Image: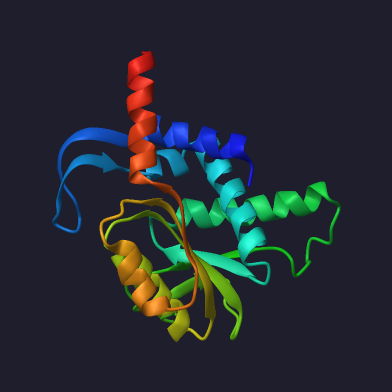
Length: 204
């Protein structure tokens, strides 16, 4: 994982996605800060950096993973950018575009479709495939757990779980309780982002 890319992404999240104040979170908890990672992951450079970092992490920690997925919509830009980073890596190294080393993407709906196939998952699906679940912000872990359960129910194996920012408010424990020996990795903690945000305020 590139330290430069990691620092650049942290600074973008601190600039674009972090706010101090009085907020009520989706979980109902009160907080003196709010992190909306989508303003970073949907930003051109933020999306590129997040895709590169997650791709590097997956290749380092989960080399047998065939796909990356998560619950819409927090995971959407992470999934797309990671899959794209995988493809660009292959083009750069002149590898077969149909190589099994590529990381494809899938998204988990919050509810099953009421038309068509009625599928809960969109995109990549292969029985028995090893996949990685991603999420942007983890608070209680609810959205990540929903994605894990739907992925397992579809017949795929969850090899690992990645979170861009862990708020360290119980989500890790809740997720680890259902994934057991499967690794849960957070790229940043909320304290990392807060510290970067405060450092930026001091220099401006």
